[in-house]
Length: 475
Image (tube, rainbow, N blue to C red; front, side, top):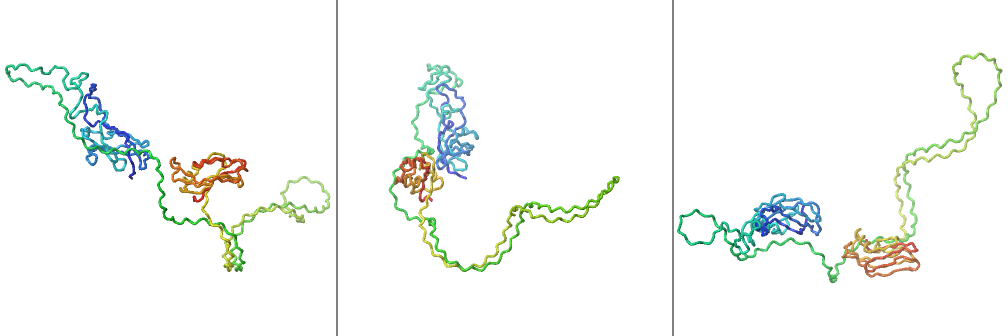
C-alpha cells in the first residue's frame, strides 16, 4: 500500500566520480586504497511533516540523466529509521563498477517501499577521496609533479629532475654516419597553456525540498465575513417540568371479572416445628397383693427367653404440652400462570389538562467541581472538555461557590478554541462579571481570578463549601 511521504536530505557524500590527481604535491602514494562505497544519509517525513519510524525498504538507482535516461546501477537495502533519520552505504549489496563514473555527471534516485521514486533526482558530486583517486583518466592539471620526495616538474612546467638520460645541447653537424638504430623516445615536452574556459554546462537538477520553516506569527484578524445562512433548526430541547396533576376524573364502571387463572403449583412444605414438651405421667395403678414366697429350688438352667408379653393398656393421655416454636416458612412456590385479562371496562372521561410546564432552556453542563483548596486553570478545564468530545464554540459560564447564602464567583463568556494543549491557540474569556451574595459571612471562596489567563484560586473556608464551573449549551 502506498503512503504519502516527503524527503529531506541531511547530507550526501558520494564516491569520487571525477578524474583527479594521481599524486599530491605532498608526495602521497597514488596506490592508497579508495573506498568503493557511497554514503547516503537523509530523513524521511510523512505528509504531515512528522518523522517516520520503523524499518523501510530503500531502492537506490544511479542514472545518466536528471529525468528519464539509462539505469547504470541499482540496489535495495532494508534500513531502520531513527526519528526519520537513516544512513546507507551504497555498494554493500551490489558493487559499484568503475564504469559508472567515467567523468560524466550522474544522478541518484531513491524509492521508499512501494511508493513512487522521490523527485527530483540528486546530482552526484565530488568528495574528499576524489583528491586521491585510484585511477586517472583524461587531462591532469597539477601545480607540480614529484617522485617520492623529489620534485621533477616545477610549477612553470620545467623539468627540474635528474638530467641523466636527457639530451644535451645540439653540437656542430658531423659527417653523416651510417643510420643508427632508432633511439629511445625523449621525455615529454612541457604542458601547453591552459585552454579557454568551456561554456557553462546545463543547470543541475533542483535539490530536494528542505524541511518546513518555523511557523510565522499569527496574522491580524481579517474583517468579519458576511453572515452565513441560518443553520438548521436545532434539536428539540428536553421536556419541560411536569405540570400539576389535573383533577381525577370519575371512576369508570368496573368491567366484568376475568376468568380465574389456573392455580399455581403448591410450594414445598415448610420444615416441621420442634416437638412440644412431654406431658406429665399419668397416675400409677394400685399394687396387687403379694403372694407367699415359695421355697427356693435349685437353680435350673436358664431357659430360653419367653415371648414378650402383650403390651399393657395405654395410660390416659397427659395434659397438652406448650405449643412448640413455629417452624421456618417454606420456600414460596412458583407463581401460577396469569389468567387471561378481563375485558377492558369503558374509559372514564378525561381529566382536565394541567397547566403547561415552563419551556426547557439550553442544557447546563457541569465541567468542574471540587472542595479541595488550591490553584486551578480554566484552560486545563476546557482542554479536558475538548478531549472528552465537547465542541469548540462560545458558551455562557458561571464559576461560583455552592454556599447558598454567602457565595462568590464570576460569570463570563468562554470562547473555547478548536485547538487544545497548544501554546499558540488559547481559549478566551470575555464580559467577566464579579458575582457574589454576602461573601463576608463565610471566609474563603473564590479568592482570586485572572480575566486574561483564567487562572483562579479557591479556599473552602469556614463554610466547608465547594466550587463548580457550569456552562450553558455545551451539549
